[in-house]
Image (cartoon, rainbow, N blue to C red; front, side, top):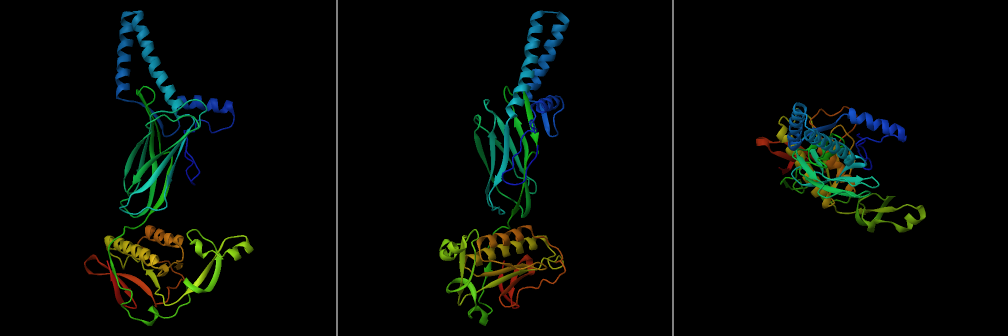
Length: 377
C-alpha cells in the first residue's frame, strides 16, 4: 500500500488497513488467495528443487502406496505451506519509509535513508532485503536487514546515492523481499514507496572577474542589507539566519523571533540573469554547462555576500539574503529546462550589476556584464 508523500508517511503491506477485526481477518484470507497488486510469492532455486522433489515423492507414493512415502510427502508439503505462512507473518506489522537530505548534486554522494519499523507486539522480523532505485540516473542499491528486528524497534539503513544527471529525480523502493524462514519461497512487494528530489547542477571550475567592467556601481554607496551598523529593516526570523542578527528586544515585544537587517556600504553586488530559450542554447551539453556555471557562481557569490538577486527570464526575480534563498536558486537551476520564456510583464533586473550567460565558441559559456565579458566556463 503506497502512502508516500510527506516525511511522516509510511508504507506497509496493507494487510490491516481497516479498524474492524472481522474485516481485517476477511481481508487477510482474501489476500492469501489473491495477493494485492505488487505482491508476489515465487520459489527460490532451493524452493524449486524442493517442489520437484515433492512432485517426485508424491508420484512414487501414489504408484507404490507406501505409507512412508506419504509421510515424506506430507512433510514436504507442510514445509512449503509453513514457509509461505511464516513469510507472510514476517511482513505483517512492518512499515517503512524513505528519508533523504536536502541536497543532491551531480557527481556527489548524498545519503538516502530507509527506515524500517516493526509494529508487532511479540514477533520479530528477519531477513528483509530492500531494492532502491533512481528512475532517471538508473542507480540501484540493495540494502539488507542483517539482524532481526525486534517488536517495537526501528532500524535505519543507508544508501550513498550519487546522482548522474541534473533535474527532478524519483527515488523509489523497487522491491521488498523476504526469504524467511527457510529460503524456499521469496515474497516480494514492489513499488511501495516513492520520493521526488531535485538534483542540483554539478560544480565546475570557471573564471569570473567582477571588477572587469570598472563601473562606479562596483564601489559606490548602496543601501543594501549586510553587516553594517545602520538599521534598514526588521523582519521575522527565517531558517539559516545567523543568531547574532536576532533583535532580542523586538522579539520579546512581538513574541516572535525577529532579525535586524543593516546597511552595508562599499559592497559589490551582482544579479544573475538567465535566458533558457532553446533558440539561444542549441546544444544540450552547453545548456547543462551553463546551469553548472550559474550554480557554482551563485554559491561562491553568496559565500562572499555578493549575490543580490537571481532571475530566469519570464519569472519573478528571487532576492537572495538567506541560505534558504540560495537553496531556492539551486532548485530552480536543478529543474531548469530549455524553453521559451513565458510571456508576461516580468522585467529583468536593472542592467547595472546584472550578469547574464551566453553560449560561446567551442562549447564554452560566457558571462557578460554591461556587454563586457567578465567570466567563462
